[in-house]
Image (cartoon, rainbow, N blue to C red):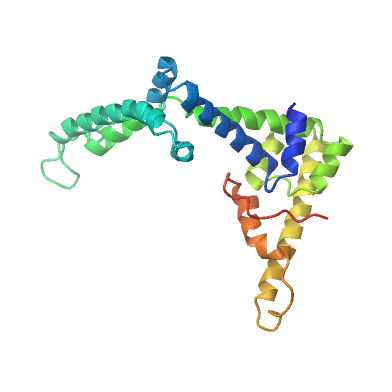
Length: 241
């Protein structure tokens, strides 16, 4: 199943691993809001992780589930109140550096207390789901890298963004796999560089009358290929051979 999912994702816009990781997290959050907001064990885990990370917390919003989100984040606000209360207690005896009454408790100031209490004890659950999905699909890509169907899908795709290229290189089992990944990536980046140059050239008044093509989205694809793609970053069409 992972093989077929990778094949399908290679036909999408952007990096296939970004696509598949994003879809896995989206399914997880959808399921979480629908059936797990009252799961005591999961809510305890979320207290230890200090809720979802910033990126995944905001991914809850488009689902529009105000009740489910409120149930979970009431726990989080209760914990935040306790954290702020402890920071306020520390502020009662603390003196900033530079004041003569500095009490020597270098790490006991309210900022240090609050940061320490807000540091997650365990990873964001949605990040864990994404990491597991990423490992699964990178493994499937590497395992079938020489498969003719996979190679054709790769040829027509934008291939991996640089962050996921690095992850795939770390997971590669042979020098041949690493070389193959790098050759494909170098080809895609060279093509992208040419399209960026063409976009710049056509913005010159001397060539502004020329028809505009797919190079006009190259600036979006450059961001995606270098930084990674999000679920809302799919306006840039891949450049087919």
